[in-house]
Amino acid sequence: MTLAKAHHGKIPATVITGFLGAGKTTMIRNLLQNADGKRIALIINEFGDLGVDGDVLKGCGAEACTEDDIIELTNGCICCTVADDFIPTMTKLLERENRPDHIVIETSGLALPQPLVAAFNWPDIRSEVTVDGVVTVVDSAAVAAGRFADDHDKVDALRVNDDNLDHESPLEELFEDQLTAADLIVLNKTDLIDASGLKSVRDEVASRISRKPTMIEAKNGEVAAAILLGLGVGTEGEIANRKSHHEMEHEAGDEHDHDEFDSFVVELGAISDPAAFIDRLKGVIAEHDVLRLKGFADVPGKPMRLLIQAVGSRIDQYYDRAWAAGEPRGTRLVVIGLHDMDEAAVRAAISALL
Ligand SMILES: Nc1nc2c(ncn2[C@@H]2O[C@H](COP(=O)(O)OP(=O)(O)OP(=O)(O)O)[C@@H](O)[C@H]2O)c(=O)[nH]1
Image 1 (tube, rainbow, N blue to C red):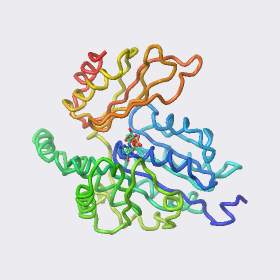
Image 2 (spheres, rainbow, N blue to C red):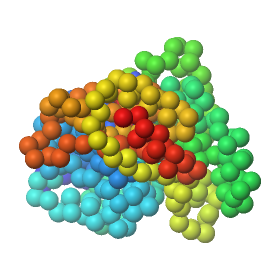
Image 3 (cartoon, rainbow, N blue to C red):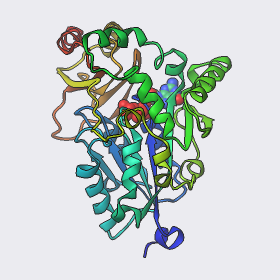
């Protein structure tokens, strides 16, 4: 019997959710580097066909979580592939000789946490693991900018063309569903807004949910491991009372999907002037309302690859690691937007930046 089992009976699992670019991976990276000696297994799920988050976390070299302890689920959103992907992954993890002390699951930014948490009630899982808590990371700057409230006009326009669109607004609904599932809400990116902005964000977040989970503030996802990994809730027993919009609308149980969102990968050659590229990329993102763009770029003469991270038109960039021997250099960027985003136009506009 492992130490974790001896102490707690079941292995605790923390589900980390939050909209695209809110800061989930950044928070987990910080957690792994300050894990208080805990051995953590990490399950990462990303939207889009390019495993950027896993790559970033594998590169952080934290002892708490070696590359073997990082499992990437790439077959779509974890909430839609619970039976096919998540349960078998958990089963395999639990069969390991060297079990982790704690399991951390990063959902994709578009995932509904409810079906994932409910899966912990499957008998084989329930007897071995409990959900320590659901942590919802919020991009405070995006909330302050009205990201989750300001696209009613757009949704109304979509609805004119699509009678079946039963949602209020895909972003708003998802935002609320992720908050509804929370045991702890982390208001992240507080460095990007002032005190009065933060107060409005708090009020807005509180107004979106009927329960009152604890809300804390953070920048760069800096939250102590003892807080993140010590919620002790057993959320699988409570999730039935935290229904998503989808569950409330479709009690009969039809499947949900993420048709409102779309993603594709743009492959380019080398970028010789990254500063100019990124500057002009901001224009493309704003013009086409790209929600999230991330990936790696090849800069000629540089031994390292450039990580590009855009959340709306805010773009971060840094050289994250050297290109490995034999690794083909190139630029690959995943682009995520609402389903009416004009893929051909975005591809052409990004390619024209070179
Ligand atoms: N200014 C600022 N930037 C932040 C903060 N936290 C994260 N970021 C940046 O925001 C961008 C997105 O962060 P991630 O941690 O990748 O976000 P995520 O939620 O994992 O994104 P997805 O997995 O794509 O949904 C990165 O460029 C981060 O460096 C913060 O507190 N302040």
